[in-house]
Image (cartoon, rainbow over all chains, first blue to last red; front, side):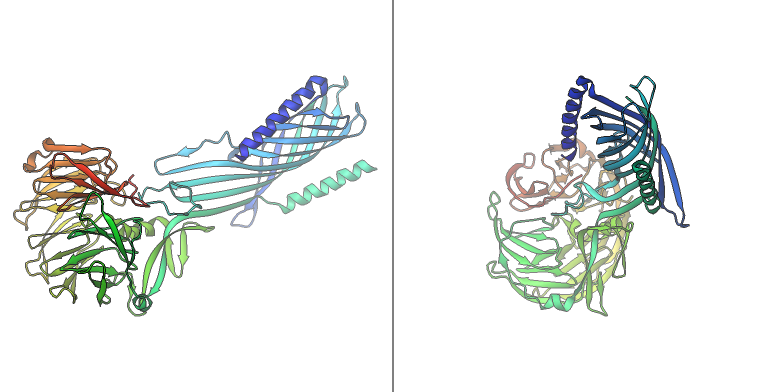
Length: 208
Length: 415
């Protein structure tokens, strides 16, 4: 249900942005970089850092000289987990057009686990579910000589939630417990692991 | 000047966030388990047992036929009394609330029922005025700590915890699947009994009760004064008991025990017929024992069979023939006709006059009548399954005719 609402909002947004784009107000920011984060404390007491690939593509419409709104889609790797972040976003620019500019960004959305396969055997089933994503960023825009293209560099913070579920099927043949809503029907046990990733984001790319 | 300040502020903020924030990974475990519950037996005994008005059947256990009445156990809760003088429309009469009750038997208008560790005797000669007349204390001693007078029972619950699998609860290490299996089989698994899956049985003025490991003998020659005689150790995995001509046939998950009960207060072992591990109810006639072996549930071997065992010499039971089955649960024998509950596959009937050719004498295979147990009664064949408690007219053994089904709130689930 929540997903459906998100898709609807995205669809609306997309059509709005497309409409604006026809007025040559289209804005694109496509970047590649890495996510850097501090893993959980090991039993020895130290942290294992993670550094993984991130790709992002933001499509927006200029609502005036300094502000862009749009949506973003990308690819984020967190160790063994691959997520597709889908978000709504804003970019604000500081400084004169045609010159080097500073910009700030804010993206809010969720991570999709489309790339993770659900594994089901006779005995158990396990799968990932995506969660909320929040991504404020700050960057620099260096325009190329012809003025239309620009190089960009972004530094940001990304907060991403995700969940891993592993359930054992109830094979005892016993009746489900009345009112036991904490356990989904058909399962005798469920292990839920929630992940909250805090990452520093470094990206470079182009804007046009 | 505005710009560098902004960068500085962001860098400070970002580094602050980064150095203070590590990834958070939290795991919660949710599982169904049998959680120990401690009860003072003195409290249990102090509570009055008063017959209540009829209650709907929730999750029926053992079913017992007595005269025109159906006595239906509601595991750990009590006993429903139904008037079955017309099997086409049984009437729910009343309910006897008995804590911890999983089994029952009736002898000369006296109903015997377990109440945790005690055996109760009720006078049911007037069905509208059932009275508790006797209590034999401290006889079913499993799950009982005699020194403290406390009993441990188990409550079927769902637990969520952030520590994996092993959960300590007042000194008990409870593991989700293990404890559930062990205790559930002892409690509610005795569903649909009174037929071949009974755990209480009566013969020659004695009441025999089997639990997982022990056969207990009660002298009930004076019906309203049951006397505990003695326990007899049987070994593990005891499931059912079937009396026949001064012998007790006890089904375990490893085989069938035959006990000589010609001295009723002290049955002695005649033989143990062993087979691979499987669940196995037993029914018997003069010459043969019919045993079903089933895979699934806690009986893990992949065998689904009907075995015919020659018991003409009860000291030397021998396998005569085995027939493949789909997933046989309970079974019932009425004269030359054998009825087998095939779990989710349905209900089968056979003519077993010629035990060497049972497979060629299948009479009917009702695939839509999913069933776990059955009782051939004087007026009807009672079948227990996901549809509730159903009754069939079996006066023409080759053609079963459905008479009625008693609705059940939580019917048996068959995998």
